[in-house]
Length: 583
Image (cartoon, rainbow, N blue to C red):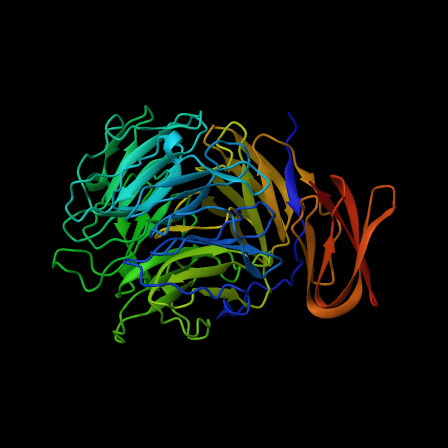
């Protein structure tokens, strides 16, 4: 079988590895100025491309008396989208997009602490059908909070772990196995998981010991319920190893944020916390569990500067300036206690320590914040952060306005033997003799879902030495000499195909690429220009054209057949051509 790597065009940037990080809240100007009523303990948020048009959309969990909110990304601006998905006016917690039936489109799942879980199957063309009852997911009303998805038995179908925060500690967390036929079965007891309530907020599937099987880490509220780590035995059962690994923290844990922050090939865990601790024996501040690579973890939050010492909720790792290291953003809710941090952006100093810079923006980041998520509003390779705020406050959309002096690569996976979303895969890249590692998850942080793309900063490198993907199936795909500043979709077991062979020197971006037939191709330039966009077929025949006036433009590709095309961007000073795929 040939190997295929879809290579999307991006911006060719400058060649300087240093840039001053700067984020600005642009929720109002970008159409995301949504306010919420008073949730109890916040609610979920997703920054995921649910309609597969190449642009990250926003999904917000329903408030009491309201319903889920879907914001479709139309070329960097968000508009309300009616998908016919309802939570019947009842408050929800996690909202998450997942391809549970491996048919290539995103289905919708929501968990609620006041209602049942709901599953909507995506039948294509914007049609969603509720299949909650027939699927076998729990119809009983529990205090559901988080819902994380992974393939614990490596059968290529995504299973779901449901976190239940029962104040009476009677109702326990649930693991539902995906049977591969559209139905799910409760295997909690069969899998050897605890049948005791733990006040669990959320969880994450990840492979802490790199044995090829997904383990589960769980954040438990209150200082009398330790966090849990279940090691996957590889036979459909789990073993509780929290105490043996040092991961059984006693704290008011909120988030399970997974990343390899020091690029040593082992996954670490960041856990937000209530401060000050309710018990003298509890963890002080947030915890940063460094994976020691020997089956144990060490809390290094104090020594690396990320303890936060406030009331933390959502947290997300990102390379804000694409300088090759992993920064960290933490949301907080402090109820006007000004002596505590309201939120924090921790910039990686390159030596496994972090500092809060004075000049990174985030002006007005003082809301009652809970969940957050990572995405890319305009496909420029510089990640943005969205934050769900409570108490009638608008959500934050922290637009990344960092000078684009560094290069990047974005990678999305499509499984064939593994689950279609490629969840549970390792992505390793090599740049100038240094390596970076990412791991794919579905449901992370505090009730959050990040973009389907993994973001890698490259500094001044213009070429990636290699990209290696290790899938849950055991398949390993390896590619060499990939150009920077592109969005890639890697298909399991398929060959590399370059769609971007022309160097773009005018600092512009064309997206999404590939673009759906009957879709819109968007153009964005760093500087205002006057010019024309013209699409040609492979015989040189003009198909469609439009004009550019300013720094944006668009090209309607209605009634255009699928295939390869050439897009010519012509201005007074230059003519550039690039390949475009219409699918």
